[in-house]
Image 1 (cartoon, rainbow over the protein chains, first blue to last red):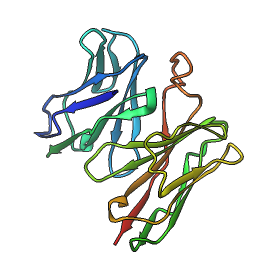
Image 2: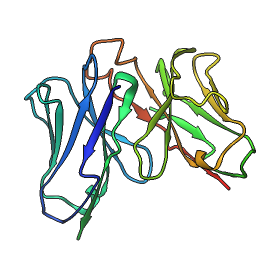
Image 3: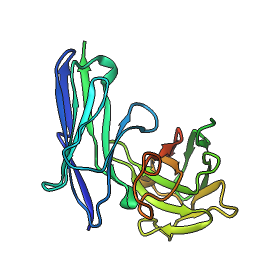
Image 4: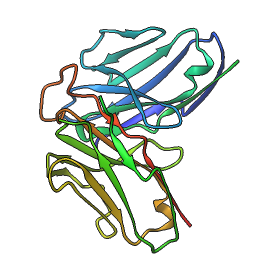
Length: 107
Length: 122
């Protein structure tokens, strides 16, 4: 059965800290992995990863995929209070989502 | 570009009553998804449509849930009768194509979500 596991489940940091969120997966016919940010409303798209070892970057956020070890990480540097959200990873095959990591950034 | 529209935004019903949610995807998006997100959990796929056909409804509790997308555009999700454990946010999402059926490209994988419909069953 396909599954996606995220860790940690929740994280509290102070502004300026760097965080690393993890997503591991077991999926047949893997093609890509997506990261989403969910604040109070619907998830918004961050990254799509298809190739191992190639870092995707957007501002202070970056993500990389390891297809051999079956995981992805999402890094956020110099965190801000606006980064507080639930971060979800998903596999497009059946669009399975992980349970998410709830990040809270304190001022 | 208009986003995914959902209604109602909020609904409170008593158990054993029925409820219906409506979704209008982004124009031109062939694939439409309904997700159930219980508080503290990730979204769980209920049903996926490709145009007006069902691609996957394996996790839809068919004894009480039903969904349709008759003309391949907007969709409705119905719950009848509702149970307490159905309290959740029901998210509708659409994408340009089904990323599983096509090789990934910058635009195929992304899901665009509506604001969600929050259901409370008392």
